[in-house]
Amino acid sequence: HTAIQIVYEIALLIGCDVLPHLGNLVDVISHGLGDLFPQIREITALSLSALADAVEPSRSGLESFDHVLRRLWFGSVHC
Image (cartoon, rainbow, N blue to C red; front, side, top):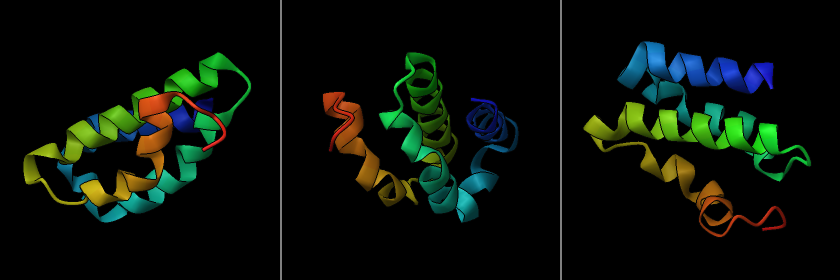
């Protein structure tokens, strides 16, 4: 939970400067979407949202979210 929370804070604090590291950050926290604990799934979704908001003005790097979008849209932990 704490590590994923740190990614959330990074996204909020550095904004679009997170872009060079976006793919790695998404990969590092994406496992949290399949966690058994709802608190972990929640902070993961919030962190992914914060990362997307941070890079949205540049409209680049959004392909980094392709592999997690299915889980976010359908809420399935087994995708």
